[in-house]
Amino acid sequence: MDFSVFITGFGMGLSLIVAIGAQNAFVLRQGLRGSHVLAICLACAVSDAILIAIGVTSFAGIARILPWLDPVMRITGAGFLIWYAIRSLRSAVAPGGGLVADGAEAGTLARTLVTCLALTWLNPHVYLDTVVLLGTISTQFAGSQAVFASGAITASFVFFFSLGYGARWLRPLFARPSAWRILDAAIALVMTAIAIRLVAGT
Image 1 (cartoon, rainbow, N blue to C red):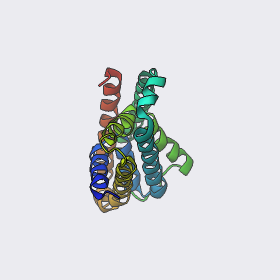
Image 2 (cartoon, rainbow, N blue to C red):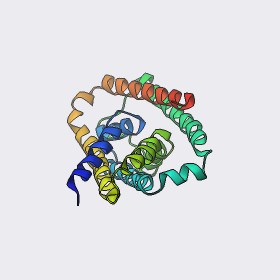
Image 3 (cartoon, rainbow, N blue to C red):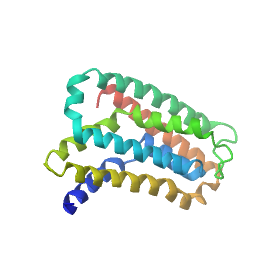
Image 4 (spheres, rainbow, N blue to C red):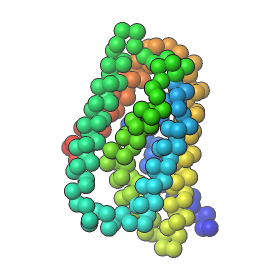
């Protein structure tokens, strides 16, 4: 294995997912609640792995075959993000709002996974980062694309599990309902901003 190519893939993968976005905000929220953390981290990391593999092996062909996919994903993703932003905002302003840090208000595993997968697979930026950008960069490493991809995939697993399980160190702060309200309000703003960018095509 070319370790330098692996490190390049790891660094590029980490740099593309470290920014706070819809998916990361959801993982952080679940980690703070201690709710279905393993399942959520696995769902996000495995989804990234699938998309990275697609990008490294066949991203150019997908764009040629499905030219309509980008606008459809943008509108669908924006609609879902607005719905989720409204939910978060309602939670932030509701009387006695805020979540319970021990996860007493946690949803079912199935419902939580559906939300997580929707935030992942309905977000066009995820495809831009994993399929297009990483797919393009991997072409610079002829014969070592698999090594590059493995580095990027490793970065996804490290990041999501660190975010999900590392969030527990912030629980003392989020023992206060006001902190949960601020987090929910911030999540609503992030989701709305991303939705606007999607519709604007940026």
